[in-house]
Structures are given as C-alpha cells and as structure tokens.
Image (tube, rainbow, N blue to C red):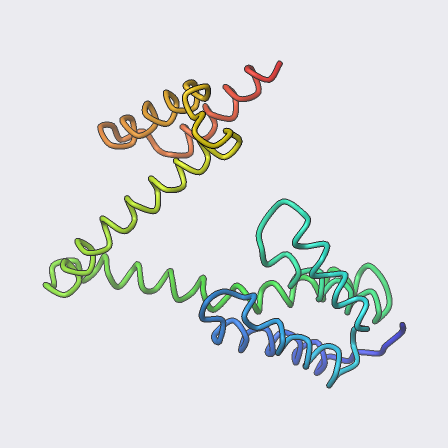
Length: 193
C-alpha cells in the first residue's frame, strides 16, 4: 500500500492520537475502535490486515500494552514512503498518545506537592496510601507466585525472601528504588548463570 501524506496529515495523525489520549478512560485499549475508524475507514492509511497485525504483534510482544499505537504510526509511515516516515509516524503517534497523560500527571503531582497543607489534599493522600500499598502487595504476590503450581508457593522461598528484604529496605531506609532494581537485576543475572 502506498499513500501520500503532507504536513497537515501528519499534524492530523498527532492531533487524533492526542484527542484519543484524553478519551482513554479505562486505558488506551478502549479507543481501538476509534483508531480503526480513523486510520482504516476514514483516512485509508492502513489496511485491515495491517491494523489487525499491529494489535496482534503488540499483544504478543513483551513490553507496554500500548505498543500497538507505535506500530500504527510505524505502518502509516511505511505506507507513506519508508523508514524516515515510519519513525516520524511512530513518534507522532506515541507522543500524541502519551503527552496529555504525562503532562496531567506532572502538573497534578506538582499541584499536590505545592498544596500538601490543604485538608483535601492530605485526606486524598491518606486515602490513596492503603490503595497503593495493596496494589504493590498484589504485584509482589503475583511476581512471587506466578510460576508456582496451585498451592505450592513455598518452593519459591528465595523470591519471598527477596520480596521481604526489598519491602523492609523500602520502608525503613531511604535507598532509592532504582538501586534496588539494579541490585535485583544483578542478582537475577548471577543466579541464572
């Protein structure tokens, strides 16, 4: 498939993903039908096969669930003329999809930090703390028991021990989590040798 895109088309691609990012309540996956309408039906920038293949490849690949957005942009760019346009399409699609949520997170966190003495902000932070702790515990549980047969969790005692040590270090020290992540990667590499 070969298409021709001008500057307004590239801007339209960026703008469309920007608007979809603001509508993605429940995750980017909820906007796939709108992406299909725009990219395949209205603009004819992708074929049905390219659209479906992008989603299938993204879902089978390790990494973020929104990888298909980069693949949509990549395929639009390939259809427009080559690898330079593919990089442009991928960049515009991902920046459009990520920019609103990044800016919203940045400014909300900044506002909360600057207004941390307000009662509403304190109540919100105190209410969110148990939720964050519960989510972190559930992630630790899933990572520690993910490859265990049902009911046979104790054979993963090294993972449990590492999880407990990490939790205590996080709770009782000011060691940055990036250092713990690096240490975990090194330990994992050493154990797998």
